[in-house]
Image (cartoon, rainbow, N blue to C red; front, side, top):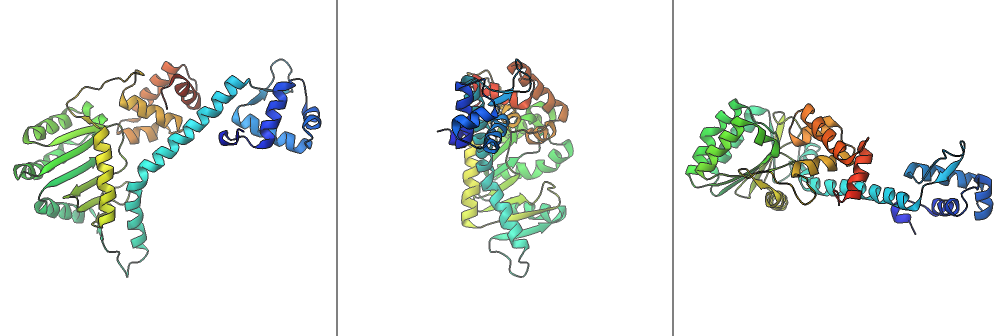
Length: 327
């Protein structure tokens, strides 16, 4: 009955037997269920792993079954965590497909894949981007997952961005929410908004990406953007990447708007931090996803755990599910 929750037949039978006859030991459980002691002990190991059985405080040296109301909540919380992990993988898969195309092409240097162009080094990347900026006619869509931008980078981008907007090119950029804490980044974004550029923010982004006229996409091939990039022009790949952008854009928050708390009392950043905590991300990994400092990520995590009254990340995930903060 509970196989979908991670219980095999032996584990479920032993769990039910322990609930019905709490005083039974391994031998007695095996006799009642007609199971060898080895299988009973294996089932007990599985129940302990799932949190459905634990050492008894009243009778040291024995194992007791956790009550069904607590036990089922733990199993459901585990399922919720697995579903969240699957959702994260699905959301990242479209962007990962483009990188996979790049890696596959590297295995066949003598036969370059159609629709894939490799750029090596920062100079080559900047030259190619400059050419795309000159050639673009209608629209530019950008994922900018770096968080706060340096003043030098912003100043270098100013003439290119201004030229595009003055030509009537539609520009849409999705930043991380963390840029709202950067005065010079916000000042630059407001200047661009006056010229007609649209910008929104989200807690995390799956990849760095620039798409021009829905026909060409430039993406890094690794976390080090300066190491190399791939230019993609395949129709199927571009359709998927444009769909990814539109999906993220639809859920993103306009840059000029204030952060709002939902009916659970959570901001978008807090909800994302909570999901990453439930998935077991470290403070460093959370900081990288949010585009914030390690200290800021730790503060977010600590605050959420205190609000939930949790002492561990897994417990925070369980309590968040119980409160309806994670669905």
